[in-house]
Every structure is written in C-alpha cells, then in structure tokens.
Length: 109
Image 1 (tube, rainbow, N blue to C red):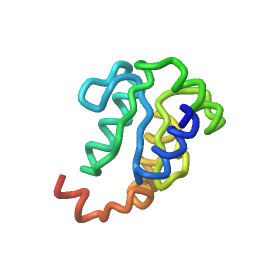
Image 2: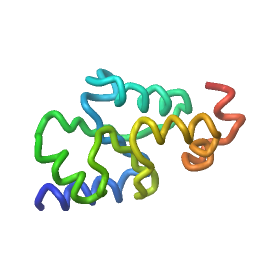
Image 3: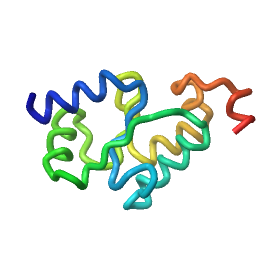
C-alpha cells in the first residue's frame, strides 16, 4: 500500500482524525495545539498523525485534500479544515454538531 492509499484508509477508518505537527500529547506548533485543545474540550476520541515523521505525508495529504496547510481535521471522512476554520466552527457551535457531541456531554467536560 502506498502512502496516499494509507492516508485515505486512515481517514476512512477513523471518525475523527487530525493530521498535525507533533502529537496530541506534544503538539509542535501553535495551530496544531489549538485544534488539539478544541478536540480535548469536547472529550472526543480521535486519531492523531504526526506529519513531521515523514515529509511525504504532508505532500500526499495535501494532494488528497486539496488543502495546503497543517493541521488538517477530518470528521467522518470529510475535511473540516485547519486551525482557523476549526476555531470558527467551535465558536459558532457548529463543530459540536459535526462531532456528534451533545451539549450535555460538553458541559460535563
């Protein structure tokens, strides 16, 4: 399986996946950290992929998504966007619906 097929499979097999610089335990850039903090706020489980381990991940990911920057958040196979879009959706409450998190669940976290 080549790298592009692996990326497609990861996106298909994980309801929430974040391609980022670093890991969710140790983000390596402010933008990646912003998205991690938002996802952690909702208490959702998600897969993180550190694009820094192989420069080709970023190349193949951008070819697949058509999005040039990192981080890239995918929910249910659909590209949500990077840090700015994720923050806008979080602030508007739209991300809550996309993640299938009830408002009661959010208030408990």
